[in-house]
Image (cartoon, rainbow, N blue to C red; front, side, top):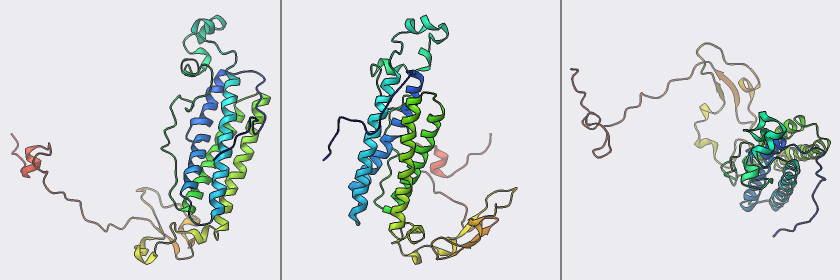
Length: 282
């Protein structure tokens, strides 16, 4: 179950409403880098978390915090829409150039929500949950969470740089700080499980003798006109301690040319595909 406070987690102030910035803030709500994504990702990971109960509890607590971030962002969107034009006429009375675009704002903030936030990204596309990663493998999920928090922090810093509003900068500074913590929080979970090296290859429960280990540790160059760039990935011990990195400048061609049989009758193919007969040229 969940409990709710009427107070926001952090103060949200807007000194000068900016409907265009409200549209940009929508990315932090319903974008692929946004708070709906991480809240739902952590919830579903928690609901399937087996093993160390501390990790499940950490996931559910962080998911709930992310809901509070959605709440704050929704309030920030509404505050930035204060005084927004409600019609083309009202917009063009201030500036004829904005007659057709309402000053850069999202028209759905008028048409669909009455000057309030929506579960959409900056382009007005609803978040469809297709980027929720909850695999049931705690190491894989933690790495996915680090990526989610990293891209979320990138977004928050870009939004920070796109506004001059002191209240919005203070608010975004808080979100950036929480992303800093959450990135490292999930890395700390991996460390708690023995570290990244011990977690690799994921899943570490699969017997490696069942994989073709002669192909496990070489970096492959597929460029026709450039050599493989050398780096940590092309030499030295693998992170899991089970092999040595190496480099192949050209792929080994181990397979045959793929050959399919004839098409099946009734499949909608041409007669020549079904019969396997190529008609003579006219």
